Amino acid sequence: MSTDGDPLPLNSGDSNPLLDTLAPMPLAPDTADPARASEVDSVGVHPNPVSLSGSSISSPASPASSPSDPRVNGGLRRRKIRRRVSSSSSSSVASSSSNRASPTPSSSTSSAEAFADADEDEDRGSIDHQDPPNPRRRLAIEDALNLPVMKKPSHALKARPLRSLMEREMFAKSALFRDQFIGSSSLVERFELSYELSGHMGCVNALDFNETGTRLASGSDDLDVFIWDWERRRPAFSFNSGHRANVFQSKFLLFAGDTHVVTASRDGQVRLAELSATGTCNQTRKLAQHRGPSHKLTLLPSQPHTLLSGGEDGAVIHIDVREPKPGRKLLVQKKNEKMVPIYSIDSNKAQDEIFCTSGRDQYIRLFDRRKPSSALKEFCPHHLNGDSSMKTNVTCAVFSRDGSEVIGSYNDEDIYLFETEHSNRADFVKRYQGHRNSATVKGVKFYGNNDEYVISGSDCGHIFIWSKEQESIVHVIVDADEKGVVNVLEPHPHLPVLATSGLDDEIKIWLPTSKNLVTQETIAKIVIKNLREREDSNTVHEVDGEMLMEIWRQIQRNRAARVRNESFIGKGTLKVPQMTTRMMRMKGREREFNAQLLKSTQDAFHR
Image (tube, rainbow, N blue to C red):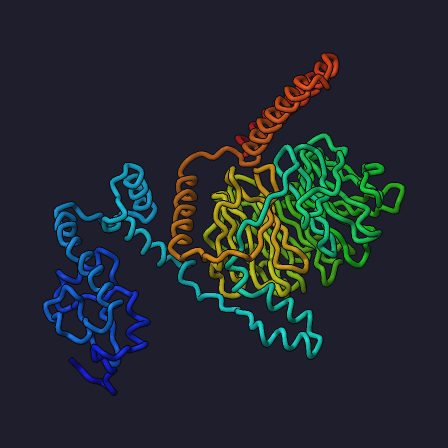
């Protein structure tokens, strides 16, 4: 035994705190014998020996160990651990011999395939909890952990509760106290589902907190807008939006005590709802009309009565709710004299003359609304610039709080961050990987009072949270949507609270209360699964994702309407003439949808 430095007291009668700390860990095998090392490694023991002050501790199964060795008789707890590891080691001898007889997976087998094969083995019940783990699954996990996104430096922004609390009380630094805690990874890593808000009868496409964070507005495929008292887990009131198709956006205007809500819809209308203090909607009126669906609105902090809307007709409309004709076309986004549909629009909070758009091409464009004739700058990752083989769209782009950065989520690609001060056509500076954005028009947001994180939903039904600076995955909120896709994320303006929605009819509220952290192994499995699905989708002909979403929404609307009609007839509250009128209205909407579907299909194949 080598003795570098002072040896630790390992007498049987003495209690060694360092060894007690290591007691729950399986002891490492003697690496002098490769066969023994591989056998013990098959049950999950690390092959490297544990060294205490230069002393190598041998495995209990090693011939070098004996019952009289003081390292073995160092306490009752260590003897129990030793017996458990010894039994595991002995049982692994037979299993390892059978493993040697079976063919080893080739190095050309991908991690995704290994995961798939291991999942099939588990479904057949061939893996028991006492057996060694499937070698292909272990290989896949190791490969996944070696992916670039999994090897990013970890985010270590930890809160200091006592120091921050003292500074808040002694120096009135309440804002600093709040910022440190909301941006602390100790809280971000613990987001879990707290409760759901139920009331909508369709997919929830829009969420927006008011300035104080006391109310939450939501818009849905059921054409209703709900104003939620989210802390009490109930709606304050709801009203019909006046739209004829899916509500894509609902926002509180920045004046008059949250009594005005603007909405945008698939029907292309931008509407204003005027609310009363008693919790009712006085009226809704049309502010502007796009010649195609309007997905997003953005408010102008310096002018609380104004907003901008973007639509799939490529137009940006400037709206002032005080004017008799509030809508004024600001620009039409074009590329090579061809109109580019807009999916997203966002204003710079620090300088709201500047706004950005994204849509059905690979560019994020910055405009000045004082000189909107041409874009100030265009940003696109260089590997996507000019590549005609990749029909990449930017489903959402948003500014940071200070306007120095803009992030964009690319469909079936990654999320990229650009510096707005960089020159025109400059490449990205940060890249966030691991999620999947293919099926829907998916949002992306900064999170934290200092924009410490980037958050996005995914087609796998999970929510990804990355460190903005390190690009590493800080947390994955697992199973955030039962039907599989998370589209909308809305952080609370002042608290560590997150509201999300997707294909489910419910809104989910997430709080940092979980006692269990998601392991890196779980994150690696999710990442490799998304990577496999992305690779598979590139090998087949894909139908337009927007068209698939419209088919899904139509099925959901018809199902919800049938349920409502059956319940009304059962209660005797719906007469036959009313039923006939409602069914005729549904038939008319179905014919209109079929015509739109046919046109979308033709456009998709022509592209």
